[in-house]
Length: 462
Ligand code: ACO
Image (cartoon, rainbow, N blue to C red; front, side, top):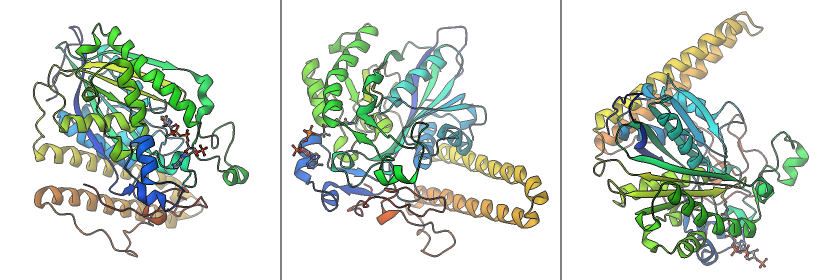
């Protein structure tokens, strides 16, 4: 859907005009996990519905996944990064405590006119962000908002804890929310929170209450802790309740809903919601078997796959509903406004979005060099410091050029150049056991002391 100006004075609605997803290539199956913790494919499948998940390697982070999903969503929407007014990243695994991942995305894609902030609301984060985006668009504050749910939960999972490590996966999904004059798009939302359950799903360490310390790391308080049974009880109650509430708020009947896209945490939680709501099972979209629980990313990834599977048509009434740490819950009711199954944008436009991002990245690097020049030249390290800085930035730029040309070549001739060989200047330290970040990475990419690593993957991206 091409970006079209909507009068700030006439009726304004907020609809999703673009969508995209990105998941790591690495696939980790239940059998892989059974090699490192006492579990089995049978237990995980029967208790959760999960068969495999994607795990980020050392080169992939919440930011890189978010940027890939964002570029795809912009290309589908036909919106250039420079047209964005706001970038919101919902995440519980941000790139850093600060700056926000959203600001880094804004910089990487070249959203030069956009404000940016992160939103933390557990697995409900994407729906919270979608609701904020719709408000910003309907109020006339913004014409185009980029909403991303992105996570690398593998970095905060204790790979020795079978109660949690089998559940989570990494990935990102993004949508562009744009103003439109037709009555469609996000019609109602319901947001809720009950902080009395904050301890049921928590990363106790690393914040203001328990700053990082050797003792904390030894206790493993940097990892996610969960009371699975209580979260399960909460989820099975709140998912149907939030769904019914948002349907009522939109003035619809439950039977009007063509498709519910629920947060993918456990197929049994989804089954319980189906039962309580009395809707046919085929009105719920489920893809947890392939990705596990990707927290804020699960709903936008499921949305992308539902569209690709032809499950969403113009005029369909949809509900997206999530729950998570906080405790929080959120649901939106939306009427799908895209007139026909979205055709992929011409390669040229997709390339244009990436070229724009590339130039933005170049500009950003030059600004960083410029900003530090004065400091370095006159500082104690003198011109040596400046040389290091320039070398670092040009090294990163070379990687970026390789990434962009690789992407383009893949689309033009269906083949990627071979990855840099180990030891070459472009190779980065590989993640623990090729799985990325179980124990976290130090600044130089090395793994910090951590628990047992998950096993290497069994397969590749489909
Ligand atoms: N493999 C084998 N056995 C296991 C595993 C495993 N991976 N995990 C737990 N068990 C064992 C337990 O130790 C327990 O053994 P015990 O009876 O000897 O003590 C037994 O299996 C049953 O444990 P339960 O906790 O009762 O298992 P349950 O059927 O409730 O399933 C689960 C556990 C999957 C965690 C479930 O409670 C659940 O899905 N809860 C919700 C979790 C959730 O949605 N979290 C995400 C929230 S969203 C966010 O913000 C990130």
